[in-house]
Image (cartoon, rainbow, N blue to C red; front, side, top):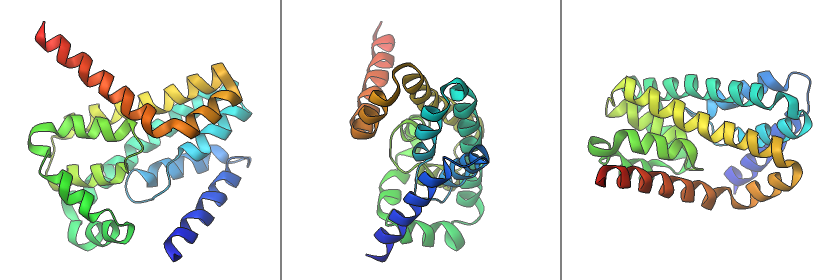
Length: 197
C-alpha cells in the first residue's frame, strides 16, 4: 500500500517536472536513475515534453537516450561490485528479485537479446543492467545492445509524437506494452528469417 502510494506521488511529481524550465535536466536525471535503480520510466516526461515542443523532439530523445546509457553503466557497476550490498535489497524492495533470478540464468546464451528486448519494452531495465553486471556480460555487447534498444525506443516515440501529436500520445500510453512486445517479436522473427536464408 505504501509503495503504491509512493509510486503514484512520484509519478505525479515527475509529470509536473516536464513543464518546468529545467525539464531537460530533470529528464536526464530521471532517465539516468531509471536505468539503474529508479522504478518510473522516463517516458512520462519524454511524452509531454515532445508534445509541448515538437521542434525539439530529436534533442529531447537524444538526451533521454544518452542519460539512459550512462545510467545503464551504473546498473552494470552495481551488479559487478555491489550486488549483495545494494542490488539485492533494492530488487527485493521493488519486488523484482524473483524476476531477476528467473532471467539471470538465460544470460549465458541470450545476453545481448535480453538487454535489447528489455531496453525497448516496459520491462524494468534496471533488472537487466544489474544482471548484466552480475554475470559480467561483455561490456561492448552490453553497450551496443543498450544504445540500439534505448535509442530505438525513445527516438521512435519522438518520431510518432512529432508526426501524429496528441492522438499518438493517447495510443502509445494505452498500448505501450503490447506494441513493444509486437516490435520485439517482429525484429527477432526478421533475424531468424535472415539466418534461414
